Length: 76
Image (cartoon, rainbow, N blue to C red; front, side):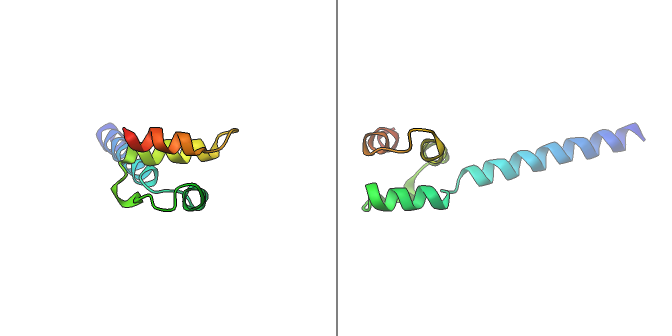
């Protein structure tokens, strides 16, 4: 019985991790709108999941996303 509970818990943790990783690899609609205004020629299809997360985080920050931040994030 304990093995079944442990296996179920491990599966749940794995699925939760995969779901959060997948959601982090997509630009939010707010980020898409901001990028279309500040960097309309940016090819977002080539962004890494880390870059996507950084852009989303910057848009959701108190300061918002700036053109300088876009350049810094995309350059890495």
